[in-house]
Image 1 (cartoon, helix red, strand yellow):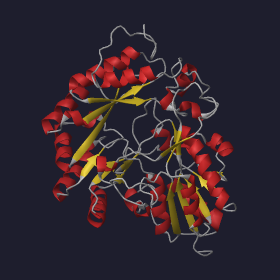
Image 2 (cartoon, helix red, strand yellow):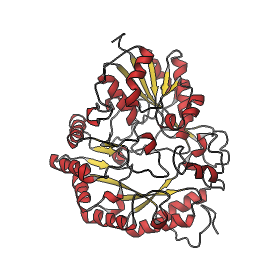
Image 3 (cartoon, one colour):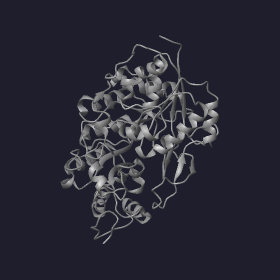
Amino acid sequence: MTRNVPHILLINPWIHDFAAYDFWAKPMGLLTIAGILRAHGMAVSYIDCLDRFHPRAAKPDPGARYGRGPYLKTRIPKPAGLDDVLRNFSRYGIKPQWLKEDLLKLAPPDLVLITSLMTYWYPGVQETIENIRSVFPQTPIVLGGIYARLCSDHAASNSGADQIAIEPAEKCLLPLISGFTGYSATPGFDPLDLDSYPYPALDLQTKINYVPLLTTKGCPFNCAYCASRFLEPNRLLRSSESVIEEIRYWHGKYGLSDFVLYDDAFLVDAAHHAMPLLEGICQADLKVRFHTPNALHIRGITATTARLMYKAGFTTLRLGLETAEFEHRQQLDQKVSEHEFKRAVTCLSDAGFDKSRVGAYLLVGLPDQQLSAIEYSIRNVLASGLTPVPAYYTPIPHTALWPKAVAASRYDLTSDPIFTNNAILPCRKAPFSWDLISRLKELSTGQVHAAGVTNSLGEQS
């Protein structure tokens, strides 16, 4: 060590958007960084601008909806260029005065690390950094996360941070700390060995209402709409023993029952990962629940994996279907065939899953997508007995579909990430339409039966 122990402040920023909801959304990367910093002897403070359990907020039931719930929201002006979107725009999270008060309670940090998620949420990052600067004007601020890595040039020019971290945190974290503070520590973990990582510092939260759980990193697929391979080029696996030990820790020490899988491809190569893990969870006889908002790989759902998931306590299932037009999906991905989808539905039903609680994600708003294609997919999912879950498409740089999205959009997507917001259906040529959103909701619940719709998304014939 070359100096006194540094004090590092980690911050999860506000969301600025037309809509946002805590659908099991925790900044797991930031909390993992907090765990690594503490394990290497540093003093760590943490502020979550999205904290639904902030001491000055209303007191929601942490167990409601298995831990999900609405954020506090405050209406704010829409960003420039989005005047054609007839929706209210809001800041989601704690009030700015609460953030300022929380910052003033802290000893001045030596460094601030702030994360970012959706690229079009960067205005919330900007406002958060402005508030940090007003209290700690001399403290350097480093921005990491998805926006920082996917839109690094934009982030460097617009975020207000002193430095943009474009590498995965586990690889650059300790050298970065040393560069800013002079504090050196010998790495106590191997970035390529997930079993060697400390647990995420969930105890820094005001309330732990569920546990985000990562059993793998990376995805072997290279889907045209997804940046997973760009962000995580290597696929890494944890051992079953490591995962079960962590589940026991949170369940035993904090009494937590809801665990949320953040894996991108949990069921890939299930025989060597998911099945041994599920068998171990069943043998441990833990009374816990698992939820899969990131979607399960349909091809990996067999009679055996379905039975083991049911026995292990899997409660909320989401499947990565994306489209039921199987003969035309080659330009999107190679994840699943029609036969594999039907087999998965049968296996889940035979295992005991209530099919009404199993949702299938369907991409909506793809470049040049026909409403008739969405309707076809929705009907197929409804016919299977599952729940269609519209997943509105976000154009993402560094993906194969990005050039086509740029060409199809009514906005200049390359000029500003704000125009990639999936809530405005950016790849639709016509202006935003509430009628279209309502229609898709009605279709997904089987309330309407449209026919003869063949034009581009939302342009009914």
